[in-house]
Length: 142
Image (cartoon, helix red, strand yellow):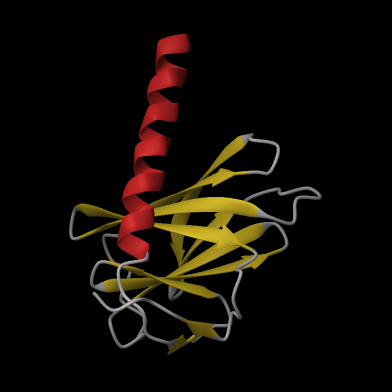
């Protein structure tokens, strides 16, 4: 049991570092198409929209157009301020992935979003609430 938990924590830590480097590689601005927080994940963008009892994740192309979700699956790993973690399974729901989550009174968290696109996992890191406006998304140029 301890080794399984330790392995899970090690994987999450590795994903945080991997996702942090992926999501902050470039600096330019984008408008948020659905009012959420947008990050860059490789050649894709993810937009996370937090609502009471659920989190929606939009998978977008380089021009911020919503991608078809056929064959996609995803999950969020949330780290709450008290260091507890929650895993949220994301399922297609219209043009976004949706996951049910009870955040209680929590108003901030770190989320690692991993989505399998064409069979390959693509991970990105969100800080909620965003430190910048949800209206624009910025990256640093390489």
